[in-house]
Image 1 (cartoon, rainbow, N blue to C red):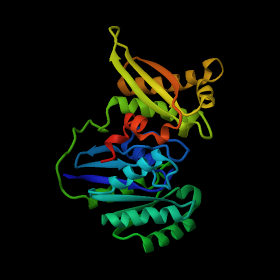
Image 2: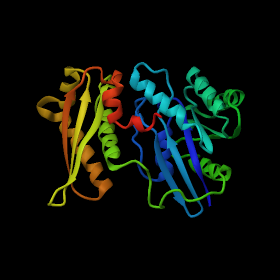
Image 3: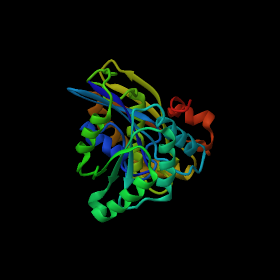
Image 4: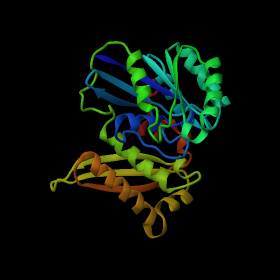
Length: 298
């Protein structure tokens, strides 16, 4: 059996999470059209008859503006250490940017074999993709192959998957074949709620939001009760999240509950509460530990 760990590297919103969901054939990690949606390192486990690949999805590497950003970048950088392979994703439409140069330096420091995937070929076209490829080849060491893909449309994704299998060593099956992530239900529930906030709100609101699961318990009637606190930094953000007569929080709750019910295969009662905690993104000793980043920063 071929098995091993593959870390995805790239700037925010380059398509790493979309790529993983296409490979997995289901949504395992949350996605949105906004940058920095992914905050945590997440192991996603792909298993077929002759391989097991643990994809390590990471936050996009960027210049941090607050303590939360610093933790996110540190989690992403640490995820590149000790893996068997790196999948470095680039955006053909954006070109090879200064941020990509910074990511390339971090990838090179790891000394790990690297596959380059030039994403969004459907938007940018082959000419722009070739320009990105040339710059990437000149700046990234240990490159074993370059692929043009559209993660959103699934184009070229499974060719990359086959190349990953080819490059991985023979090894054991690390996880049960029906396991798709090593994160607990509390983490998945918080991520699903946060994704709905990203989809339904704009500007600074989604980035100023943290979701903390306070309680999960089985009720006698078979319903799974989940209570979550949604933290924001200002009263005005709380007002937006609640909405007129509670309309926004109801939308968030309905969409999140439907997805959670699909995930757990049973009825869910979702109890959402919005609270203000000023400048929580700077207070690593309070919220950053609660939303799970403590497990990614050693």
